[in-house]
Image 1: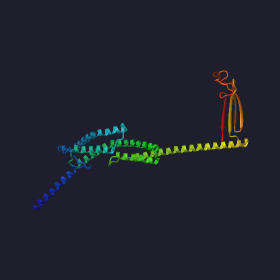
Image 2: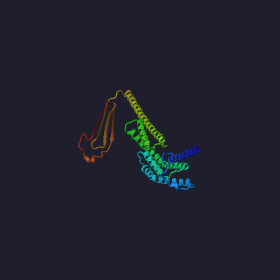
Image 3: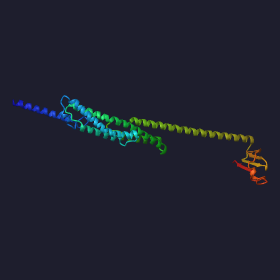
Image 4: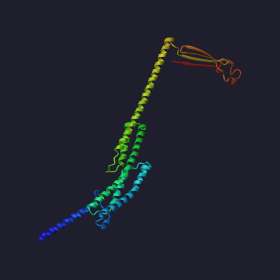
Length: 313
């Protein structure tokens, strides 16, 4: 009889230890955050505990989301409305999420059984998703701003710094990667690889377009040089033909013009490449009334005699 009493006492102590261990584990969520900061649910009747506990968790979750919405709205105003790049956006997003989860853990009532612990974890996961969704939208918008900033740097570097297209692309890609890393939340599924690939594709297209424009300019310059060489060859051939027809030409080119006093007749003579040419023309002198009846002089002078001389060597 004594042995039977000792066995029953031992089994009772084991049952008490298992119950205490189960109650302790239910106070820690799968997120590593202690469950419950309030004992308000201890007075809830057993029949309505599950639905009432879920409703209390929903109220706490809603209040935490409303408190975090102000910080998210401030980030949205800077990134979307002002098109401003937020420094260390990833750290800012982590701070908002962590603070919200901590507030939820402090305000949420304690779970007294496995069903309550499961509901607590589910609400905590919903809270994390509700915060992550708008922050990820802002993250993608920030990546677009970082991409445009990197493209601007690429265009400026490739044109003004004397760096090659490849070096300018490396600098722009490095700047984008560093800034995107700062904007990414640690431990999240946020990814900037697609934006980076798009940036590299745009830079490659710009580089190819610039190369094509350079090639067109080089080809145009070569065509112009070829045309000039062709004209020079034609001119040399014409000169050779003239030498064959007229013999060795003189290097002297002389031109003379003389206006006969008190008349409208103008006499012109020229000697060029061994050939002489005389021309008489009637050109009225529009300034004769201003010079008087005889002009400045009665003979041949600078006013009515022109002379030009050109010597080709």
